[in-house]
Each structure stands twice: as structure tokens, then as C-alpha cells.
Length: 420
Ligand SMILES: O=C(O)C1=C[C@@H](OP(=O)(O)O)[C@@H](O)[C@H](O)C1
Ligand SMILES: C=C(OP(=O)(O)O)C(=O)O
Image 1 (tube, rainbow, N blue to C red):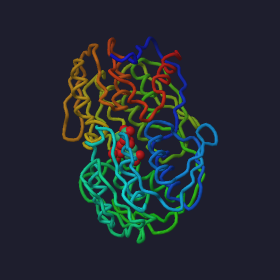
Image 2 (cartoon, rainbow, N blue to C red):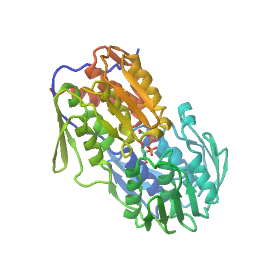
Image 3 (spheres, rainbow, N blue to C red):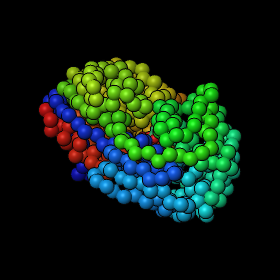
Image 4 (cartoon, rainbow, N blue to C red):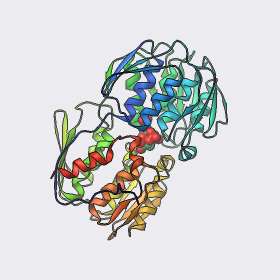
């Protein structure tokens, strides 16, 4: 048993919490700085496993990172990308955002990662890259090798991105550096996590890239330079949601910084917490979420915010009525098969959870203590930590997986619970 079992709570919260920078914005910021025409300075970057590995991946291609102060990094692109072996860890952002950059290097770059990463889908992205003129060995899954030719012809490419919005984002991020730019279409089932594509498009436009969406699921990126840009990264609102959810289980309130205008799925995240029974109060630059220790059973469409699936399932398992989660079939390809993992772990504690075609059906039942397995998945650990607030005797087998996107989840969690 891990000594890092989630601490039990005792009483309503009155907490203020500071969450580090957005994983998604940091990853894009690094990749775009690497592809840019000159040096960029990024402030407030996330320093967690995914972003450290991203940095190492780009460094291998010759990108220079200079730490100016805490969370402030100068990124200097090289004249030419040098090929190398890329360790993606378990990061979707690395396995999907870096191969297009590797195609611009002169030579072969092999991509490999954690054993769990081998099960994550990447073929549609690599197929898309092949259609853009790139040669790839073993494009089915990790490990694969991108045969960089120093140039990518680009042009018209169609991908099935129903498995991950990152297939679209990965191609868009580098599209301006392709000789003919990129004319990208998604054809297939529903496209998940659209706000993340919005973040990609916004960050590209911010760097002078001409990208338009002439119709839904169709993006055109003009060829040209990507401008260097100094940028401050916003806090990670999805990670913040785990802490904001705690009052729904133990009562009280939690306050955190919340940008007034953002392309992160800010409103959708708060809507989910409100639907589950939270009171949400926005003030300039921050939000306070309050709860009375009761979760409302509701039907949640999480297609815009699929990263909330684990947290929402844990909350629904102790709700006052049955609920469902829909729109998230693709989370079967996240860090673990999240639908299977949630069904197994919640049911092992006495829950009544059933997978559906695109989500979960959750019928509240009296839960008992036991070990909640996290499957190397940070969001399973978030779910288990929340559950441990509501059900005595719930312990997590591992919390180290939380370093994927939060360097000190355990410390932040203790801080949250210490403020009552
Ligand atoms: O582009 C991004 O930064 C992300 C996109 C989403 O991926 P999916 O479309 O696979 O859900 C999200 O779940 C992931 O955590 C981060
Ligand atoms: C799906 C996730 O991550 P990744 O960026 O590795 O896809 C996640 O953080 O929930």
C-alpha cells in the first residue's frame, strides 16, 4: 500500500488554492516556440512530467531552453532540427504534437514511451502525416520512427480524429511550416474535446499564422513563418476542477484564480460543477465554488470536457440520484481505458457503475473502504482522492502518477484539506 493514501477529511472547507500553469498551453507554447522564427519567453509554464518530457524532446531536436526565473523560460529554436530518440512518457501532447516537428528534421527520430503509452492511439495522426508527404516506419502505434526529410510537402489531408482532438492539433501546430501549408479535414465519428482545438487555433493566430475554419471540421493553415511570442500561461483549469469539486463532498468553499476571458473550457467546467450541485460565484480573476456535501445525480455530456470524466464519475458514485456521463467514448484511449477503470474500481468499493457506448451509467450505492487503483493515470488518482473524502477507508495504491500534470498534487491536497 502506498504511504501516499489520500487523507480523510473532517469538516467543511474554506480554502484558497493556487494551481500551476496549463499543461495544454505549456505544451503548445513550447512546440510553437520551437517552430518559431526567433526566441520566445514563456512565463508561468507548468513544470510537471509531461512538460519536462516535452522540453527534453524539443531539446533533442536542438531547441535551447534557458530558465530565467521560476516558471519563466526563454526558448530559442535552432537553425535546423537534429533528429533524435524521443521519450513521450505517457503524454498525448508529446506523441501527437512532436512527430510533425520531427518530420522537419534531417534524419530518423524514433518515438517510444511508457508501456501504457503503447496502447494509446496515434495511427490517425501518423496516417495524416504520411498523406502530407512524410515517411514513417510502423505508423500503427508506439514505438514508431519518423523519417525526417528536412521538409514536409503538406497540402490536403483528411484524418479521423474521433479518437483524439490532438490528431488535429498536432497537424495544425506545424502546418504553417509545411511547404503548401495544410488543408485539414476531420472525417469520422464525433470530434471530442473541441475547446482544445480552439486553444490551438488561438495560439497559432496569436503568432501571426493565418488559420481559418471555412466549415465545421475543416481547417486551412497558410504556409509561412510562425512568429516568436512572449506569453504568460494561464493556470490549468481542468486540474483546478479537482480541487473545486471537494466542497460538493465535504461542504464549504474553495477559491482559485480563474481568467475572465480564456479559450480553455472554463464555462463548461463550471457548468459541470454547478450541474452536480455546486454554487459557483465568479469575481474578476477568480472563482469560488461552494457545496453542502451533497452531490446531485445528473446526466452530463462531457464531450467538451472529457478530462473531467474520472472526477465526475467519483462524484456521481456518491450522488443523491442516478446519473450518466456521455460523449466520452474516446477516453478509452486516454492514460488508461478510463471507462473500464472507473467501472472496475468504483464497483469494487460497492458501486453500481456500468459502461455505455460513450460513457458511464452510475447508480449511487453505499460504498465501503478499500484500495482504489489508479492505473498510472493522474485523473484516476484525482477521482480516488475525492472519493476518499466521502467514503472512509478508501486508499489509493499510487499517487506518483499525479506528477504527470501536477508536480505536487499531494502537497496541494493537504493544503486544501488543511484550510477549514
Ligand atoms: O490538446 C490537448 O492539450 C488535450 C486534448 C484533449 O485530448 P483528447 O481530444 O484526446 O481528449 C485532452 O483530453 C488532453 O488532456 C489534452
Ligand atoms: C488525456 C489526458 O492527457 P494527454 O495530454 O496525455 O492526452 C489528460 O490529461 O486527461
